[in-house]
Image 1 (cartoon, rainbow, N blue to C red):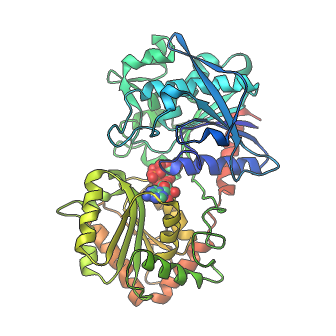
Image 2 (image 1 turned 60 degrees about the vertical axis):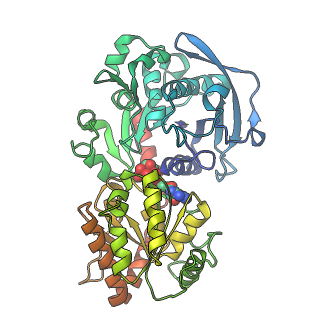
Image 3 (image 1 turned 45 degrees about the vertical axis):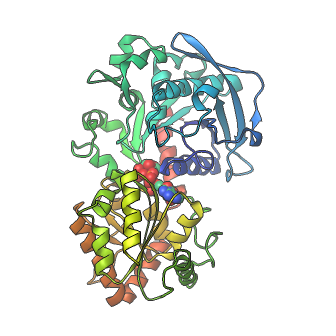
Length: 490
Ligand code: ADP
Ligand code: GLC
């Protein structure tokens, strides 16, 4: 099948979170199954043009009655199979993408012209296909930034060469919907009746994700658990009604992990390779991690790690909230070491800095580091993810693959991938709690630490059990292929 991925992020070119990992890893897995996959991305300022090849000629993109001109650059996706490489096409437009930031910058987290930038991008996706004379069977869009792609397909493009194309829209995070003033609607060039028919209308505003969810031929999200939860008002971010309405076309497919990148047997960022058969190298990683964070190099003290965006979704309010957060009491009361890598909301970064001044067993690095994230996954004993909601979550799967036991909240993809410790049988792969409260996080961290000191054998057996699980993309990619086949009848 010919599959077009329209996305605002894909590693290694542009990433703010797991979306970027997912788009590239899925594309690679589909290519390995022999499909013709191509990705279209904006050419953000940080993507170096010198590494790309420019396609000849310009690209005219009709937006809002006028036309915008841009260039198209291309390269192959690193890591895609040499016998069937995945081309990536970059839309180059100085005005829209020639600046720092993907969706925004700290001073302006959501660029004012985002509706215009991503309307342009979604429209450009079709023009690229025309330019290269390649017409997909499936158009696969992701989250609000490309949610207009299925809308354009249905209301306008689905004729001529795009006549056989069907659309899938994947929800990676319902918390971001692209809600803007409807003054921006005219950029789409669509008629006002489409505003209502396609479902843009949202209390007198324009909601891009909602339009995509109503219009796409099929929709899905990144875990079965989140697909169930989002049908309910409590987790539906006001779109639960839409998702119930689309129920028969709405499924959950668990993400996989890229096992070429996240695999302790071949990881170049850790001191010594290890595996379920021979886990000794994990102790070396712990040693290196303790050294990296200037912690005492004690092999017999449990280390809890975290790598995260510092934002409410990730439960950081309950963990680091100034007066009630549980991280402080966890580190004060328990004999453990706590390491964190993350960036995000300013209040949270400040609280974390505060904690690291006051506690000798709490160490943090505010920033983004691919390398350090691998060392934390490998060197920690436990990995904490107290998410408020989690569509899939990749880090808990990385943790399992590295023999690091996840401590997670019972939600979304976390609940789908981690099995709770049973201290009677020794079963399970991690530690799970239900309520998002500082107390519940404290208690569950305490339970994990207790198990570390008192049930060491069970803990070691859990590590190996987690490492033996298969989270590779192969299985999930086949589920996507089945969905594409349902869509296209191919
Ligand atoms: P989300 O996409 O909601 O942030 P995921 O768990 O799906 O959550 O994916 C997060 C991805 O971003 C993981 O690959 C994780 O390692 C990475 N990540 C997040 N923060 C950092 C950071 N500060 N440094 C390095 N990697 C990070
Ligand atoms: C989003 C979600 C995360 C998911 C990722 C990739 O960023 O927050 O849970 O793993 O997308 O699908």
